Length: 549
Image (cartoon, rainbow, N blue to C red; front, side, top):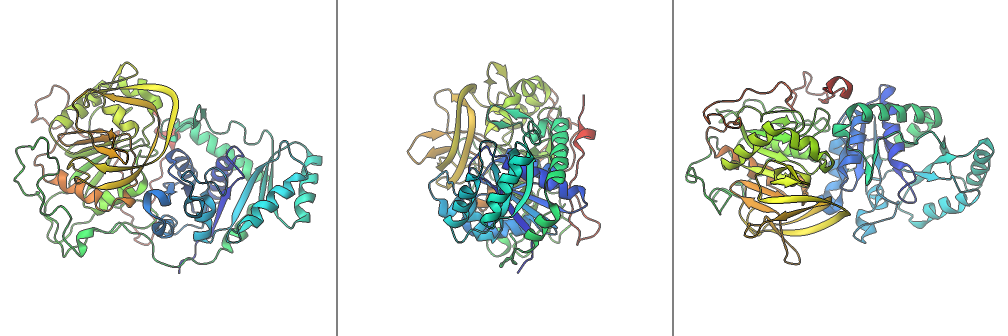
């Protein structure tokens, strides 16, 4: 049983201000010196990144569709380890479901499974006493959902506030805070389909989070709300941990040839430079604090493969568990910034470009020609490259007429139509991340179309039979985004694929392949080792101090 003070922030529907309130609560409590943790229901990496920025530790997603309902509580306990308070931001309305399974993947279902009190954010700008009927309906709709109270948003005046409080007092619902109409307006930088990703609006995002924290601290009874969070019961079960699957069995690819089948590199018959000992477990990841560097282990006498993960000084483009799984699989993880770094990290053996890469930064991505050239050379070498979501656009020949990395013989075009939803897919080939026939559930969220030329090998086949993505040498690219927790073995497959290839090193465009490019000081090591093993190692970066002109 694990004690985690916690609360969920939800709303009757989208547009009531729940993201701003959730981010502001985390920032306000963090300003008090509390250790906080933020979670987002569903696959949205942008909201999760803001929650992480406010909390000072990675924001995490809770998505039963991507990881399985049975893993939600263990993932929550893992991500909330050593936190004084965990805040879960809901998605859409409290009882809404994208896939018409509200009993499984709605915010209400997540809160019921986690036994978490819900604070309903209600936009009352055009509402009076009817707020009581609305809130009563949400409280009575599902007896498994614990509605702890409300925060009223966009209240017009003192008289309006009094009227609303009296109506809610009549039905016995606590009001934890009242926000006036200007309080949350334009606090977070906006874009057409939501808020601007935190990764590349660092100064603006940081200031927005700070403003939200200050507004919430003035308008919300934080002490009373904290008492509600502390009243949540203990959670049963163990925390999720990224343990290697070969601790008790052989890895699933033990008898396979190198994962790519279409163009086998000359080292196809070689054994990995390091072979995982089935009797040795890798160094564990400290729960809740992100990855730690693997220590020297018996039976492993050579350096771990270096896996470059695309990101920025404030956040990676992948779910936090991706990095943790890579480290647990034996990789040394380093972050490469597609906008600012000119080279890949020294000794890189694999590249992962997650689905959180903002496609709205096409101009900046195209301008970094040196890194595009390095990525192109790296991909041609046959080493593993995984690109998801907008990461696949970055690998394309061009995007909106701007040159990209040129790894894929395809072009991307922006559209006004947002594609968002879950998709089932089956692997069409053996690749560094999936075996032929592997079935997955992923998520698509993009407004750009990636058009390949005829004759390419697809990475996936949709459940309806249509092809998706690209496979070429060690490259696996697709606009489908996976949560690696829901695809057991993917990190170990990628790391083992990377380790099979000797003398992995980055290339400078046009340089002698034997020349090692020095590690750019702009590429920070993502992993840290805590001085106190009991402490949570948090990678905290001040976005203001990290932004470069």
